[in-house]
Image (cartoon, rainbow, N blue to C red; front, side, top):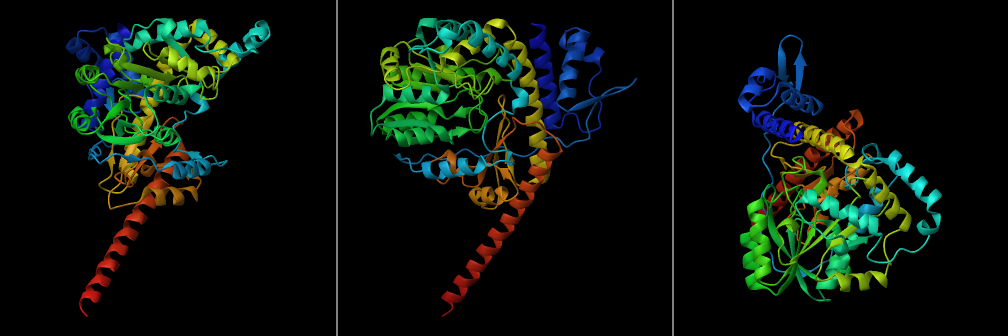
Length: 491
C-alpha cells in the first residue's frame, strides 16, 4: 500500500509540474506540509520526492527544501485524432521491411525500433537461470515442448495476470514465440482470408504486416492519444461494415501510448460481446504501466470469453527469448492445433529459464526499477523534443511503456526525415508504417527505452535540426509551385 501511495503522490506532483502549477525554480510543498495534506507519513513523501528526483523533475537544496528543476514545463499539445477511412487491403509491408533493414545497421542510435536497451533487462539473472536449466534439466530443456507449452510457465503467467485484474486458469494459457505469434494465431483462429478486421489508427506496424500476410482487410478506427480507441467511431464502423474482430492495445498503446479508461474498457467489451465479435488484446506494455496495480487489462472485464489476451516478456525480460502467451477458452483448441503444426511451441530452454526466473521472485523488483527508468526517460525525451523540434510539434503523454509519438508541423514527410536521419546514424520509425492511409506521414515514433545521455540528447537535437530544414524546404517548394501556377494561368 505504501509503495502505491508514494507512486500516486509522485505522479500527481509530476503532472502539476508539467502543467506549470509549480514553475522552474519554484519550491514544491515541504515534506511536512505534503504529509499533512495527503494524510501520509513523512517517509512516504520522501519516497515520492526521491522518485521525482530520479526523473529529473525536482532537486533538493540543503536546509531549504525541494525545488523544480530549471527546465520548461511540458506545454506542447498532444496530436490530433485521425478520421475514419473506408477499409482496404494492406500495402505497407515492403516499406516496413526496408525501414527495419536500414535501422539494424551497426552503430545506429536506435530511436526507431521499440526495443529496450540491454541495460534495462535482467540479463545476469536470466543467464543464471539458463545455465541451471541446461545443466540440471538438459534432457527436458533440449527436447520438444508441445502446445500449449511448459506447464510451470503457464502457471506463472496465470499468477502475473492477476496484476492485470484477470483471473486466469493456467489450462487456458498458450505459450507462444513472442507476442507476434500470439497475435497471428489469434487472427488465424478468428478470421479467414478476405475478412475485415478493425484496429486502432495509428496501429502497431507488426499488425499491419500480419494483416497483409493473412490477406485481411483493415478498417482503422480513430484513436485519441490519451483515452484510446473511439468507441463512437467503432460503433459506426460496426454498423456499416462486416467486421469480424477488433485488434487493439488498451494500456500504453503502440505507437501513441494511449490508455483507455476503465469505464470505456467495460463498455467496449460489452459492445463486442453483444455482437458476438472477438477482441484480440495486445497488452505487451501492460506490466510497464507507471500506475501499476491500478490500471487493468480488457481481459479483466471479460465475462463471456470475448477477449483473446496476447502479451510477451519481450519488453520486460528479453526480446531474444521469444516467450509470449495468449489466453482464451473459446479458441484454445483451434489455436493449439494451428501452433502444433507450425512451431510446436516456443523454445523449451527459454520457457524453462523464464519460468525459473519468475519463480525466483526477483521479477517484481526488476519491474519497479525499469518503470521508474522508463518514466524518467519519457519525461526527458518529451522536454527535449519540445525544446529542439520545430514550433507547433505535438507530443503524446504515455502512462506507461517507453515509446513516444510525435506529430510535426509544416507538412513534413517523416519518411524523408528517416532517410536523412540515417545519414547521421540515427533511426526513427516514420508514421507511414503505422497506418495503411497517409494520415500520419508527418508523424514519427521514438524509442525511449534507451539510456538518456549526451549522445541521445545530441541525436534528438539533430532530428530537430533536420525537421526544421525539411519544413523550410517544403515551404519553399510549395511557394515555387504556387508561383509556377500563377505564371501558367497568366498566359
